[in-house]
Amino acid sequence: MQWNFQSATETGGRDIQQDRLEILHCNDHNLSLAILADGVGGYASGEQAAQLLIDIARDEFTSGNIDNPEFFFSLVCKACHSELKNIQKTTGILSATTCVMLFIKNDEAHWMHIGDSRLYHFRNDEFVFKTRDHALCELEGHELESLGLDCDKDAGASLYMCLGGKNDIHPEFGVSAIDQHDSFILCSDGVWGALHPLEIAKLINVNSNSDKFAQILVKHAVEKNGSTSDNTSMIYASPTRTKNRSGGISRLLSAFK
Image 1 (cartoon, rainbow, N blue to C red):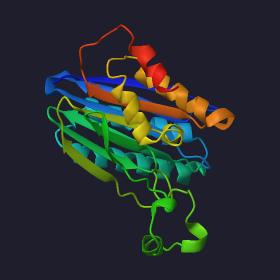
Image 2 (tube, helix red, strand yellow):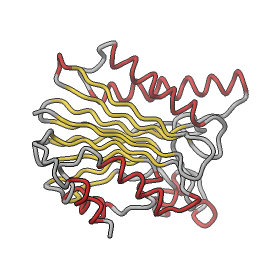
Image 3 (cartoon, one colour):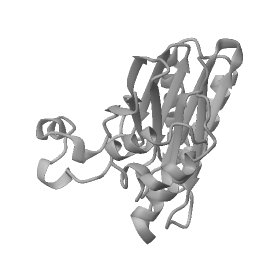
């Protein structure tokens, strides 16, 4: 089974694009890797931290360290976190990034995330699953307390885990058997802040044949977020399907009305 990958990114209302995307393939092993990183706001040079994650993942992938997806994910995250901490020590610059990665090999999908960059899983164009953000607003009271945080003061939107942050890192992993009915979206908060997963599922349902899905969805999210839109990026992964080139885009646009 062959998979198709689309990606799109917009700066939105920000001065700097801190999102980074990468899609890698290894034909010898019939596998693909999709990576999305989002430099963390409030930290300096978030775009450099996001690019560092991409560079490390690309190097490890091309070096052939791809037999065990969970090991690969852990290796990349630890290396990036360590390098960002070293940069902090030598330069005094605190730089951080979130990340989400999807590894597809044959009939299995493996993923991981750190921070609030998300993965959505769809099956038969219906929403199945999303990753849980490593953000304080996602935590229950007892979970905040276990992290040494005050339930009343700290339960905002701030991340409690990111690469390069003051935290230890504990990537969350997922795995699923897949077939021609599955699809995935990796996205930054510019997308999920604007579009509910059920809305995205509807758009997938009416747009399964369009090769412009990622571009139009990202533009729609930016427009919906308005002039203060964050950087907005996504990767869409789906099994290769026979394309019906007549009316694919028009059907997508009609879904926004």
